[in-house]
Image 1 (cartoon, helix red, strand yellow):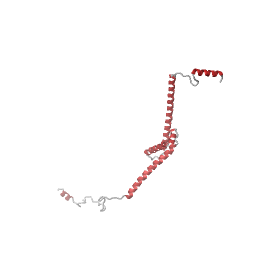
Image 2 (cartoon, helix red, strand yellow):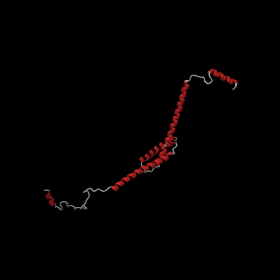
Image 3 (cartoon, one colour):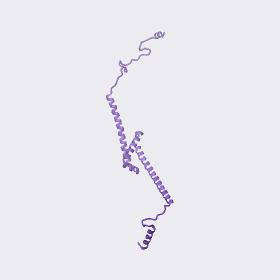
Amino acid sequence: MNKKAKREYEALQKKNGNGSRVAESEPDPRVDKLEREVAAMKAKEQADVSARQQAIITENYNKAFDGMVAKLPENLGEDKRDYIRLKAEKMLWNDPQARERVNKGVFTDVPKYFAEASKRVTAETKTAADKEHGNRQRVEATGARSIVPAAENVAGAAKENAPGVDPIWGDITPEEIKNAYK
């Protein structure tokens, strides 16, 4: 160091009392207010940017799932479609690494979990249908036809009576009918 700089440095130390202490001055309230406002504006801007990014990620996430749901067979009911989507979303969110990738906007895990969910749902449906089919076959195999007495004609085919012929009284003439009503 040159001599002049050394003298100025020593003079500054004497003035402040110690070389490590910086000259203290009263804080200016205007500066503090401005610093708080700048910090608040930065925080608000960062929150806005974060909200816009999250909205874009959410929109793309929903588009990815909507595209997968659109590829499902047409004859599949709306309730099954919703169930597959919900099951895939649950499986996706249960995997912490996949959840982290989705939160960053990377949707490479969506097809994997959607395929797994649709496979599980169709397996559940097939299992339920097979169980019901098995129950019906068991009932058919063990079931016997019960015949209620007098419910079926055991004497043969019923005879058709000719018009004007009474099945109980036989042939009755019109005069006999008139006499019966007197």
